[in-house]
Structure formats: C-alpha cells, structure tokens
Image (tube, rainbow over all chains, first blue to last red; front, side):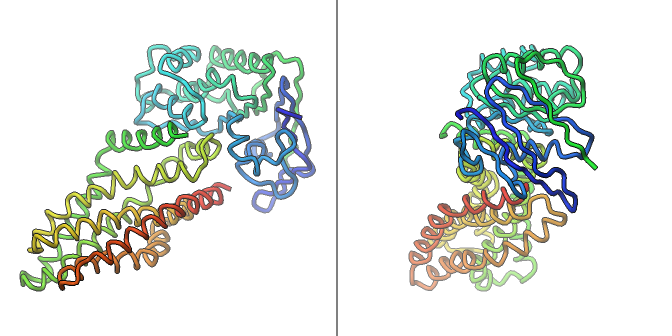
Length: 210
Length: 222
C-alpha cells in the first residue's frame, strides 16, 4: 500500500462539460503512467486532481490508502509536480529560481548540487543569467532541472514536460524519468510526443474528450 | 520549514530590490496624498495639527491598498503559487512569510517616512512617537487583512476595484483605533489604550489571517 497512488471513480466537470467519469487507476512505485488524449480532454485537470490541487466532483485520490486532500503536506513532501507553467521569476537567475523551487518542495540542495542539476539539463554556464533572457526551451529546462534533484520524491507528476524542448533535452528528460522509474519511483505524465522511455511497467490512459 | 519561510522572505525582498519602482510608487503615492492636504485645506496651523493623524492614517491605508494586488498576483500568473500549495511547508505559513515580506516592502517605508511628513502638519514632537508607533502596529494589520481580500479576488476580472470594496470596510476599526491613538495623546489622555488595542489586534489578525488567506487561495485556484 505504501507509495501507491490510487484514483477511485474520479468524476470531473469543468464549466458545463463532464471531462471524465468513473476514472480509476492505480500507480505503484516503479510504474510509468502516461495520460493521453486531445486538447481539452482534461489531462491537466486529471493531474491537478491527482496532486490534490483541486477536488474532483466525486471520487477520491489516495496515497498509501489515505485521501491526499487529508494528508496534505505529508503527501506533498513526497510529490514532485511540474505544471504547465514553469514557475520562474524573470528577475531571478536560473540558479536562484531552482534554489527557491527546491526549498519550497522541501528538497535540500546546496549551490553545488544546483549547478550540477542545471548542467545535467544542458544549462552549464548559464546559471547566473536572469530567467528573463532565457529562451522558452531554456526556461523549461530550468523548471525540469528539479527532476535531477528530486530523486527522493517517490511520485513525480509532470504536465507536458517535453513542451518547447529540443531533441537533446527531450532525451535528457526521458533518461531522468526512466532512471526514476528504475529506482522504484512512480511517474505520471502527459505528452503529445511519442516518447520512448524505458520502464518495466508502462501503462497508458487515453482520455476521450468530446 | 524555517528554511522555506526564510527563503520566501528573501526571495520577495530580492525581487522587490530588483524591481524597485514598485516600492517607490507606493511611497511616493503616500507622500503626495499627505502633501495634498495642507494645500487643499489651507495653512491654518491649529487645523492641520488636528487633522494630521487622520490624514496620515487614511493616506497609509490607501497606499497599502495600492500595493495589495501584487501580493499573490505574480506568483499566481507564473505558477509559483501552485508550487507553494504543493510544497512541504503548510500554505498558511508560506502566506504569513509572504505577507511579512510585503509589509517590509510596502508598509515599513511608510512608517519610516511618516515622522517627516508629520512635520508638514506641525505635529508636536511628543506626539510624533505615538503616530509612528500606531502606524508601525497598524500597517501590518492592514497587510494581513488585505491578504485575505487579495487571495479571494485572485484571478478575477476587475479584481482591483472589488478588492477595495471588500477590504476597506474591514480597515475601518484599524483606522479608528490608529488615528484615535494620536488624538487621545494630544488631548492629554495618553494613547496607550489605543496602542495596546492595536497590538492585540495585530496578534489576533497575525494568528488567523494567514490561514484564512491560505483557504481563500485554495478556493481561488480551483
């Protein structure tokens, strides 16, 4: 039961439209789950529900058998969530941004580890540039550099991690995700690309949309 | 946990330092509004001395209103707020740290500059201390109450006007007690009672407002 995320009979309505109904899945450590589906089919909503950021209209999400909305920080300290938005401040440097993100997530990272995480994502030498001058892809890389520091979080939830990335960076991120799964972590992600991530157990849920 | 709070405060101060125009706008607004009154109501010294605490308080209240919209807006827009909500530290504490940083940026400068402005009104020197102390205790209360309003109106269209309508009535007791402190001191009663009330208010609001704002934020992002 421990380190298992279970979604039970999730029902989500956005505006007037039901995005999904009766959706259930479970994710154990070492498993990879990809959420597919066309634009507007509710992928982001599903991830936000899985994180406990929004409440489903009915159903619940459990971590280790307990509702995540009740566990709160106890669950969130085990979660690494990278959303659509990069959560970067234009006026802070790449290293400062990553440092703040790690501290908020409860990851202890000194300057050296932060620089090496940025280097892992191909941002070596750009640590002290303000995020303002970075390109869209580089900004995404700064946000994703948390993956290189978040190996202790048993659950990763990634919303479109590959947007704006070039081929080399996509490969780096796929390796990081594959590495996390092989260490026994669980990963849920959405993407439009045909990603190739090696994982022992890899499943896929396609939201229909309508 | 303490590391996260220190980090949030340091980050907000650093952001303010790198974008100092935002801080200056609030202070300049305060200075200009206060300076308009002697021009508007004439240079009668007795009248100016009487209205000084009220004018300083109303101007401080409006100036802190001006800065309120920014408490959460930027973090909401770029996704940092989501990360704070899913962080390892309870959101109420993060909000408290953010409000404290916000007060350091937009409230404390008003307190520090208020004795200089009070001189324009010929406020007697022995009253200056009471005016400054009442603002020092009162402006954090304004920031804390305002944070609840800012959280509730986050992401709404026309949030600025709605925020004023929502928060200004709640500012009334603070204004009455705060401006009353200097008046009581001027009439020889001593402003201690009002200052103690402000202190009690600060403790009460400080303990409860961050959690209320945290709940409001969770509702706003749904």
